[in-house]
Length: 45
Image 1: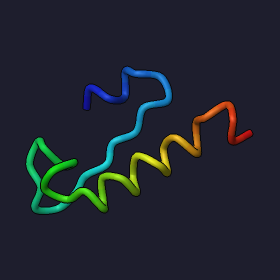
Image 2: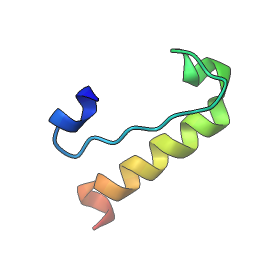
Image 3: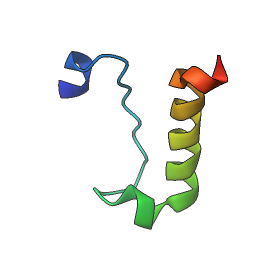
Image 4: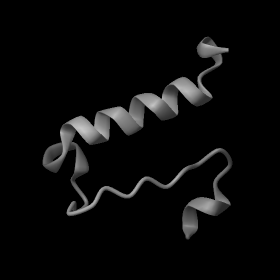
């Protein structure tokens, strides 16, 4: 659980996916990435 030691980090687990989520499940990866950016971006506040 290394992510817990990084401020504002989040863990997203994509079922049936390895280390290359952006290649194996690009739609799910992009959704999680954009959700994270929108949640933490200074521009979204």
